[in-house]
Length: 319
Image (cartoon, rainbow, N blue to C red; front, top):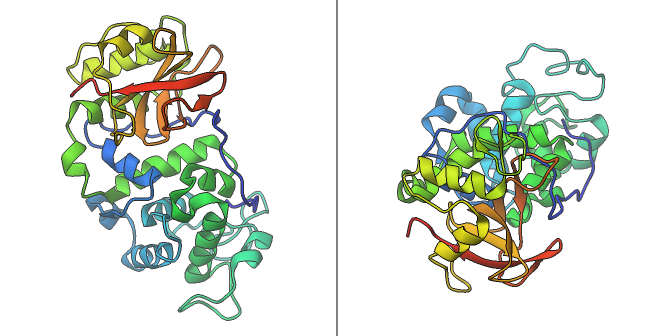
């Protein structure tokens, strides 16, 4: 449900994304990386089976008007909000939702829809109607594009601006991953890095516990990394410093892949934190006491600041 808060962005210390869908290990790393970087994807068998053909075509066409916005994210929003317009709940085809604040297949607030409904899109109603699927979907694209989706600048932030809920962001991105099928998937699916990052993503929402290494109970940062790679068949040391020392280190400027490890701290001998790279600039980690395993941003440049630490380096354990 769009709240119309434009330009909302997730800060480096982004709030936790509580993952509502458990990802299947070994199949999602490349697809999620494609989502957060705005990569091109094609509909998966799940998308074809679950989304009515006219809506699937509409999502694809409308998303193309915002470079960097994957159609699958748009489709996921439509699925969550109204089952792609097929829901019989109040507010989808007439009136307002139960809360009395949103309407139409994309569940937009009237003021937000009015702001983004013009110009009338191809095939849309004239004057625009929040209940018209074409008008609603194109208005949603314009809203997301203005909130960070353009050129893939901040896709999670754009979804968060649409409905100010971390759980909603996680639900939409996880669903979108299942709808999309990236050409790169055949490369990363099943690799140790892909398996590790997917398993780690499935732990999102697990509490941080110092020394923790147990699914459903708690993790610290290096415990999460060690457990994730154990599932992938790769043995890693227990602490972040030892994991950094184990390498192999990636050269400065190397392209990051799903499952690479990002290390933060004061320097090579003062590593204080580690996370698993989901895509350049996005990692899944167990951050600190009082928090949960989450997806958050990091600067993908060695030496760049991250809170009170800097990015010290990256390793690729499965290399």
